Image (cartoon, rainbow, N blue to C red; front, side):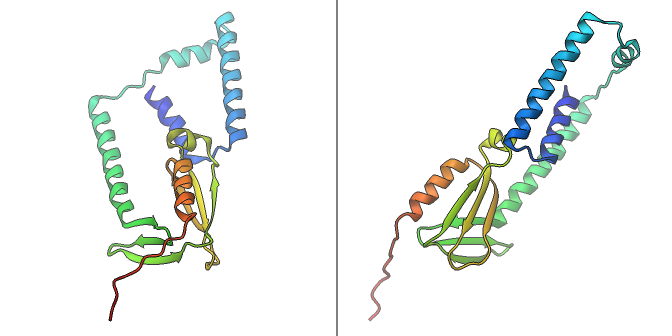
Length: 176
């Protein structure tokens, strides 16, 4: 079961699955799986060498493997958790701020007339955490800002659109 789940996850990480491709792939896999199941149920001696080979497989691992695997995954997760703290975007009513680098270098982009596009390219990524791609086009920039794998993209896109829908003016203290 572990090897099956690992294999499926590696395929999901390795390839993008657009909506039509993923639905087609799903139905093909279900149809082939059901056909093979029916074929071997009604004809158990159809391929005896394949049945013998599958029966002889006995993959197993001990608890040390699982603890090491979990430890490695925890280290990778911790490294990613630390890394994202040094590169993030902040949306304010009148500007976009890009904080990046160890000492938090800062880039400012003007937010008025900002155009936002939302793309959901991968069905598996969207099913996992409702992630998608957010593309922002600042009016004074030639290049677009592309944010990949934005979790809960529908809610975030609605919040950003609502926030940028009104222009706010902040007045500082009078300096006389």
